[in-house]
Amino acid sequence: MTKFVRYIAPGILSLSLMLVYLNSMATGLTWANDGSDGGDLITAAATGGVAHPTGYPVYLLVARLFQLLPIGTLAFRTSLMSALAAVVTALFVYDLVIRSLTPVNGGENWLAGLAAAYAFGLSPLIWSQAVITEVYTLHALFVILILYLSSQDSLLPFAQKRLDRLAGLIFGLAMGNHITIILLLPLLVPSTFLHKPTLTGEIRSAQKLQSGIYSLLRRLAWLGIGLLAYLTLPLRALSQPPVNWGNPVTLEGFAWLVSGKLYQDQLFVLTLSSVWLRVQTVAALLTEQFGIPGLVIGLIGLVVFYKPSRLYGNTIWIVFSFITFAIVYATHDSFMYLIPAFLCFAIWIGLGLDGIMDIFIQRFRRIGITGSLIFILYLFILAGNHWHQVDASWDLRAERFGKEVFAQAPANAIVFAEGDKAIFAMWYFHYALGERPDLIIVVTDLLPFDWYQETLGTHYPDLELPGPFPFAETMAVSNPEHPVCYVEYIQLADIHCLPAKVP
Image 1: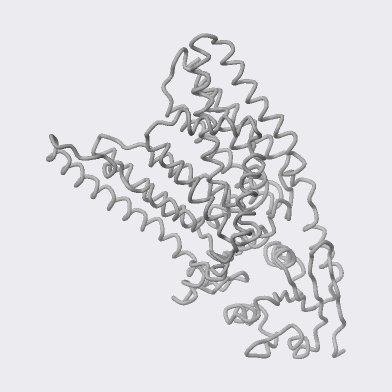
Image 2 (image 1 turned 180 degrees about the vertical axis):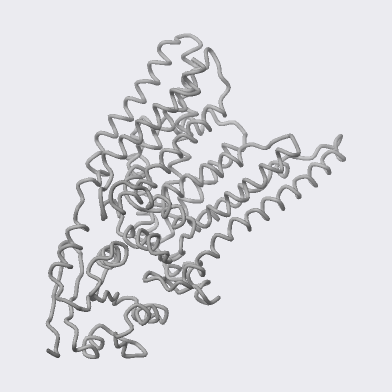
């Protein structure tokens, strides 16, 4: 049984999840599962460019490694990273649950670990991001790593120092993938600060406090080292890539990019009625992820079997902070920020199931084990019901759109693109795949930005940019020798091309 738990159970977990993801993964560029940003991320990684704010330097570096794999399309290889990150996260969920439980009556808590891992990996929100190109499964991996490291402290000085360095470094790199990881900053506080001093041990308490201060300073120092990943953004920008958000070679451009200034006006702008509606949406999404049985078991794990520990304290903070952020951040896709919260709820499911199993195993061993297996089977049945909802393998809209635009666009045309779907699809086919090099791709929404005008001037030196605020219409007039196409995708492809005004 020990050998099974140690090797075979995690192997079955990782293999089954990867098979599910591969069979529902997009084979090319996709817009499924709110994945329109994929074209931007793929292209920035492939061309050494800078993605949309906040730049995502760590994601771009890792994505580029996957893009070098000799399999599938460029988009598929990048999406493969999302799937692998989700699988590894599930493995850490499994390990964290079984490590936090005390084996009893044969050590059947591996079933609770599997249930928690499958609850996470098969939940539709996580699954939907594991089959497309996006930053959220890598974000979840960093969250579980931080949770894993912060929920234990070594008593050995050398091991504690090593733990401090690793925890700080992982945290800094995590911020290089997604800036909202800053919500987990309280998890960096060493457990020494959480212990109450005793009257009989004042000297020992002072020593622990001093040790805790040094530990925290080490973690913050290594966090700073991890944040150095952001310095790759100005280095990438210096090569003048075709995708170069903010052109962060100056301090002003760098600050604009990494602070996400473009999106800051979406914070704290909702009315009370809108907030209440979002609260209801969060509750509905939570139920959708795990079903009523999973919801009940998770709440039992949190409330009935709660015990004071860093794991419980940390998961409660993660759930609270990310749910709050998802509610107050007024974007259409803010529900993606619920992923860390759902990850923690999956852990509570594992803890709750183990507690229920312990009650039954003490008297009815077979009933406890059978009940756990039935719950895992229930998760797979639930996943089957969600398959069509998250399956991205059918979605060829972006591929068809790109081919359709490039087939209709006249030679040497200026293509004005509007909307994230059209813009990032054009970038993917034109810059990442190198198709139709004769075309000039212009994003009308970005024309007011100086950095974007500089990027256009660098890559299309013969293009006239009437300034200081060029518009699509004035650009068409200033470049009469070029045919012009206007493209957009809302529900259907909207492609409208006009011949050159100068024969």
